[in-house]
Length: 434
Ligand SMILES: [Zn+2]
Image 1 (tube, rainbow, N blue to C red):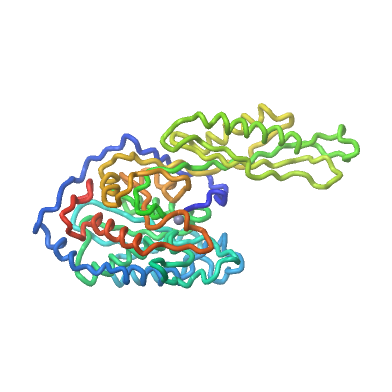
Image 2 (image 1 turned 90 degrees about the horizontal axis):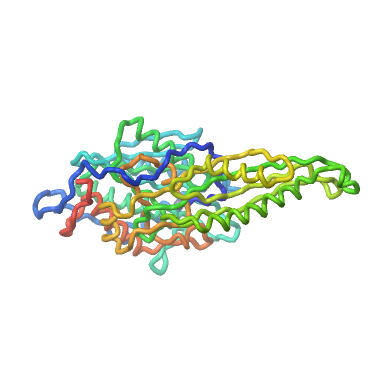
């Protein structure tokens, strides 16, 4: 889960992910026929035990991968590097083709490919970084297993999905089972701060000439398919005034007072927005920072106003920033300039596609939208279909006692085994990817 308040001033770089109207052509739907394929029969013997799942997760939690922007005093162990090199080893051990993609110096995405038995490509994107460790959190890397849970930073957000993936890959490797579709596993950096890993993954896929059919973005969704969330526009305005001695305010122009007019107008704008209807609910606008003044006895000559605007389907961060800027200019008694405009688009996948319906059936949870943002913002048309899915609840993410239930790991392992076509249970094969 990305804490959007930490999103920096990303240039406006993200292609639209409004995927309504896309075509579902191509791969076939269908049911597995008994005895049709030895791969499935063999899969019955895969060892996907709870013990194996928890062992993998404990092991991953014990490898710190705190986002450097949030590492604070943990600087010496900051970053995803340790985890990336361990994953490279695991992927190779389990027969994967491994690729490292340096996104910024010293920080690389990792990709593993397992060739399947069809033309289809499926992918799982799992962010490698975790949020920081507050002083109130004890034993963040213990990976303790207790009362049917695994504890520690990253346990639910989002090493749980990586543990499930490694369990499957290990079991498949030892049983000589290949996935039905071609499988691409991506470990991406920096989801919890600037979302730098996701666009790099997207670009890497296009450089390889790959066409992804189904992309699962790992986030805690209680294993239900999530088909949409808002994006964000971050807008910075600077109100320009003129300094004067505070005993003679009429000689100056007070930038803070002018900013207050803008702040109040933004409150009204948020109320107006609440009547906008759509799949993702109404947009939200919040004034989040106000900075101005240089001394208690000086008329302030400047004031910065920062606005966080949650955007919905059909909106673009740049357009929204421009609208807010124009509104501020109209209402402000002093000159205003736009000093910062960035953000990411909303993510919205059609909720009734065959794959999403199938995931809903397997998980027993209806397709839903969520309030937080994720790497999915950056994936535009990377995949024919995209969903968020992962074990555990977002309520446990980023907390001092972060944990995930082992039953949730179990559930995702079963869902992924079906999706990857490595388990026979008299089920329908994943639609669109046979
Ligand atoms: Zn996350």
